[in-house]
View 1 (cartoon, rainbow, N blue to C red):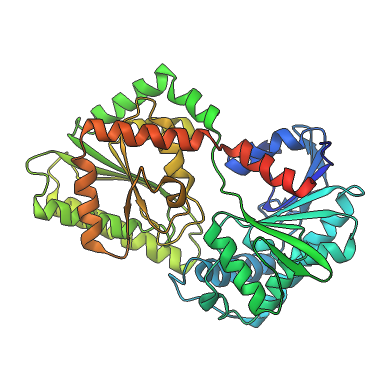
View 2 (view 1 turned 45 degrees about the horizontal axis):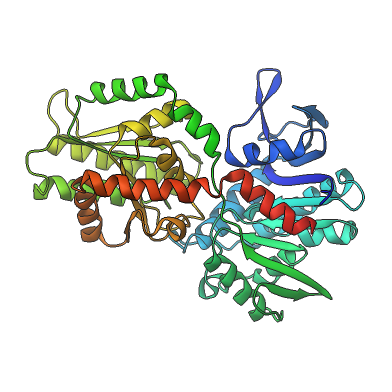
Length: 453
């Protein structure tokens, strides 16, 4: 099959400013799409600041910046995208704010991005729109360029209808998404939620299709993954193993290391896992074993009140646990509030014994998959929230837990720490095979093949 030229439309560009120039941004989406775009594609999105930039070429990809001003950042990005949609789509873990002025700005920003995409895409080409910030773009773009083949992928969960119907502009968002030819989600459950919302909005359809204005829109799950080869390459590097051993030695070579790696987001359940760890210490369930918890918390949206409160809560718990159970020079929780390079993260994954991933809701959670692939000795245990998209793929190999159940969380940590070596290796080996069978390049190819067909 001859694949058409591709234009990617996303909230952020695949590059970021460094000094007077640009560098390629890290991340799974850029990794997955860069090989497809090089020499044959464009990327439309926001630069990350309020400066105006002309289109340019970086790494053989045409980059088209869309300018945002301070009002766009306040009302479209921090407002409607991250104070309305983000909490609503994550099971209303925080109460979403419904502000009509935010909605108006959101429509305007989506329209400007659609216009930039319409001016960029070549005739009869593919356009792939990404994520919750831009759900109106497919329909707006179709009005401008009906010749295009348009796809949309949602990286976060799509909420159950009972939550989605709280949104005053739910019909507009459904109609926006149905401007696509293919709408993709992380899990079958998310796709089902969308189909139900579409039917409630008056759209007909069966199985994996929805009818929209005389067209047929494919609706399906395309679970995203990681760059397996890149992770394996780092995991097999002797320098990675040496760094992991040193980190463990710096911790005092404890008997058990629990590990968390997250953006510092209130949806990630960092506080409940630390509370469960505190209950584990209080109960003495692991006897006299020397145990520590290492939590990497990457700063995120720190100007937003809910995120500041999440950070304060986590840091309060770290202080309480260390004050109660730590000793001079031997804290029980090691807390790092900054972003670490990926090669260092792989060493962290190898150093830890139990990876704890406990979001209240998550589209996929790639940290869980990175941990598995980084364990080249097939040891280690993954404790994983039932509400992470990754649970649908790793349900028979991870220890699944309900983050709303404190007692179950504590029992899961104890069970993970005491799992036999034979069982750890068997579980991790199966998990590795599952992830290797569908890496991020397979994910991109499967979506684009469906869109191109």
